[in-house]
Image (cartoon, rainbow, N blue to C red):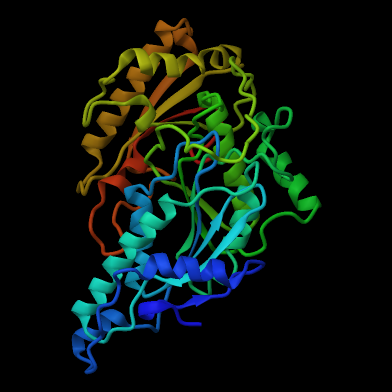
Length: 406
């Protein structure tokens, strides 16, 4: 079927055609620029031969901030439009809702018309995603990711997920006893034994925004809880053949009103993590360093955050190394960034010592932007993006023998 004004939509699995048409109506509004009839050399901007498609898991759910589309996620959607690819949207309700598939590109042969089409559709998909809401109780990210990954094609852009990651539906129910603190390898082993890993993630990057960010009745996660949640999802995606990339901007604000109930996930007030078999990653957006300095913009907030780690560090059997990482910011060498990342590691160490952690249990290091987890800071057009660079600014705590990348 072809929707109004040139936006085509395929029939979604297990959903009525009416749902797909509703998606098309939202995306097509105002996208009616006519294509020029004569092809030009500039018309290569609308080349349809190398489409890259994206699965999108998004929709406001209870106990998480209302959905917004951050800059780094918008960059992924923009890249899809630039290739004239399509997006398949799935809402992670307790029973995931596949909303349909629609193109973010254009069939215009004129480059200017093509680019206008792409910009219009990018604006429309952002507004559409922000308006999505769960329709059934609980949250199922695993099932939603599996549905969103179907039919991505041979060269997918990936899967974009916007949400807390705190699934409360089987088979990955974090509201159950202790799962938030479980060994990621054991979680994967259980899913694999029951053939419940997604089957369409081989070679696919899962871009995740807002992982671990909460609202409403959900208690905020401690640093160890957030870090283990990320480790679990990293292991699950890897076991399914994909790669997890955490987008940098934190989700904030209240939950949307009138949503189906979601069971709060228990969060232990005092960290029980004592084996330190995985790195603990603290985002710069949580520590709030003043730009290009090792000064906390809110020292009391940083200390409160780090206080959730102090008991676990004291329980550890060996020395914990605090390593600072930095964004490249188009630098030509790593000298200044290494120095800055070391100063930030030392600032975290000083805060932990002030909380009572013995200084002898802490070591520091700075690696700047030269480390195993560094991610590209340029968008699909090749332009530098500070939003993407933010994902490289962090402080990572590890025990002896544990890699910064887990």
